[in-house]
View: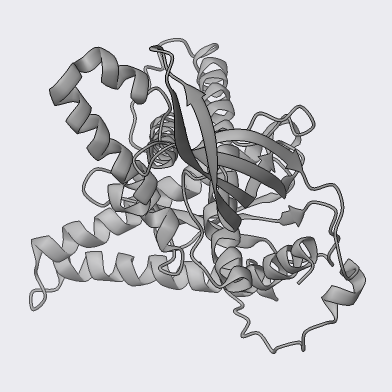
Length: 382
């Protein structure tokens, strides 16, 4: 069975490193302190990952969202989720691998890692300025304004945080929560068992508090990974152009979707035009100014303890200059699909034989991209 295969793979991984550790310190022909330390580090990282996952699953009834699935895989924790789509029903599918949390062998900290196909998310998690051309040009303009008019002027320009900074802060918070939980759940921390009667209950209470914080970060980061990972690739496949970051005018606060992630959505332009406006200056003269108006198809995610759902919006923005940040004029949630029904879409494309692995119960992110592409095609009526 799959469970037996998972145990066999895990046992082989642990046994291989345990044998390497013993041979490095006992076999006179293979003595190596560096190999022994490396094998011991791998074993400790594996045990820490299991301790964290067990602590997160221990309170499953009250904290674990049903759409999140966690697996331990060779010194890292796989974070997978079942993604649903707004007004679009699909058959039950295995959870999709969104990202992994690798245990650093030097520090024991958990670091997020991403598949190489989702380059947007990898660069956003590092707050790479080259990811967002809009933010890069805006930063250059702010630097010039700082030299010309001082910090008070640039503070007004930079009030809104960029997508890269928000994504980096979210994954940094997840790493800190996982590190704290790893120290409290018995691996890498010392506990003063001075009170035999109360120490155990106090320790469990402290672990549960860390579990609450960790789940909140996991939910947020899973929503971010679904938007900039799965939806990012699907938007490029459907539209034929690269999706644009920081184009939709900041974070969307929608009353109908109260659990939207607090990150600006990912968007692709549908149409653009130059609009001329006559503006009256303070000296009484009337001048003609041009603005760029863009209609965008934007994708965000609604993430809570019940569901992880991708939602879409029709957004209208304006830019006063090439170095200015887009301002959102209005937006509307797309209420219903155009074109085919979801039942037709599920059978529209030929089924492919997917290479399955008995070592994991999760599916590859590119498998889920196909369903996300069908959803976007249905929304846009393609």
